Length: 419
Ligand code: EPU
Image 1: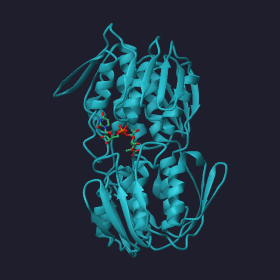
Image 2 (image 1 turned 120 degrees about the horizontal axis):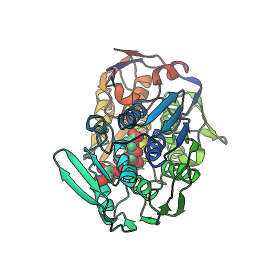
Image 3 (image 1 turned 30 degrees about the horizontal axis):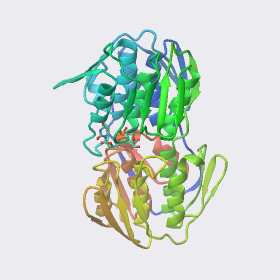
Image 4 (image 1 turned 90 degrees about the vertical axis):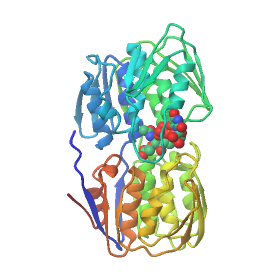
């Protein structure tokens, strides 16, 4: 796959107007694509965003022998012909979600060889929680310089208790469980909406899954053909809500599930953003006074780490001293250094904590998009800054946001892509 290296050029200062639709959640869709390995029949996924990470996982599956037909926001997957147990190491290294291929491949073929998954540069991102959980189930895991070899044994155990919560590790064990006859119990599981949606998908295909608080019990016998509509991306919805508030615009954000945005909306309210919540939309009103607050990220139902960068940017426009505590990833405050180049008053206390003094007028600068959510945040920064902002490494934004410049142009944003 050829990734085009591009930049975004933004002329800031204007307001936005109109409606923007939230697309499907990539962090649910990619896991359903991996889950299709368990289903030797047709899988039809709807509301799939047209983004780079989906292209990458499609390529991995196709290289292993799957057939995938891609139409607008739709994927028809058939893994009946999939025969390989070693996902392409180069592609695996490009994104984190590739790690969830382990569970379904192991369940279907009894072994999988995989290199260390890559992804956003937001911390070391080890896979020790995945390995420990598989070992707890009686799986043999060998590591060498080329990656990991997971092998099923005949001593399968049925309980995994995570000491610390992990989204993709929970999904990996869930997917493995959905290839077993006997129920596997997952304790202290992650319960993000994308995981619940993955469970819905698996149940439609015939899996037996019970969710009780942070406990998930799952098993399955011969999963069948399934058609499923992926839930809207709550993280993308958050980006647009902050975009409206920061640019002092009125914006209707449609096709979302407000319940998935609980902790985020509560924080917006504290900051002083005014909004109306509809059954499947959010209407952000032009804010008057924004005030400082404390942000602490946590696992769902807490405030998602993925919303932290855009809220951090919003707090540069709020009166007073705000504090950010990033509790999930080791290195997700890098975007603040880019905002400093635009004039933001930020004190980086350590890798997890920062203080922001506001409000500050931002000025256009040449900055770099470090990861998906940081990149989207810098677009918002460019939209409110005086003058021209150039954001390099735009491909990091393309990994999670479909044709972002075209969709923002329709709202009146002065943004364009250059090679
Ligand atoms: N961690 C370990 N060992 C492990 C697994 C995780 O130390 O074996 C650490 C991580 O380094 C991190 C923390 O545990 O510090 C939480 O990681 P988790 O495993 O929960 O995150 P993830 O599964 O790697 C997913 C999403 C992220 C999202 C996080 C948190 C996917 C592909 N990625 O990552 O989404 O931020 O959960 O909700 O589902 C994004 O969409 O841009 C994105 C980065």
